[in-house]
Image 1 (cartoon, helix red, strand yellow):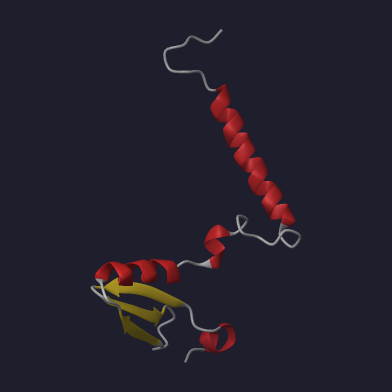
Image 2 (image 1 turned 90 degrees about the vertical axis):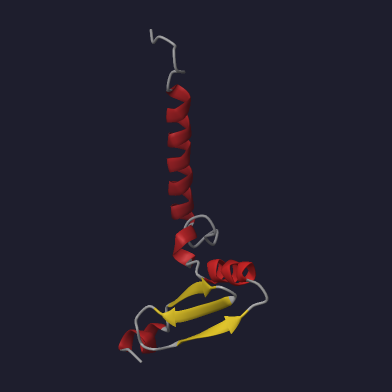
Length: 96
């Protein structure tokens, strides 16, 4: 087991091969396993669900008070994008 796995725990990556879902530590410490499902689509669905990282949605599912500034920054960024899209002229229209 690597030092990083001892300190932080394993960082598993999940994949589906047919009806078998496999997982292994991305730090190459040798930890991993597999599980058989009834169909290949079930294995793929579970592999996708388990392979998600919490940091992928940071700011979207954040605790209200703990990451409030991040929520506000994300909302402001989305509002600016929306306002810019509204200001762009429609195709074929002339600007004054």
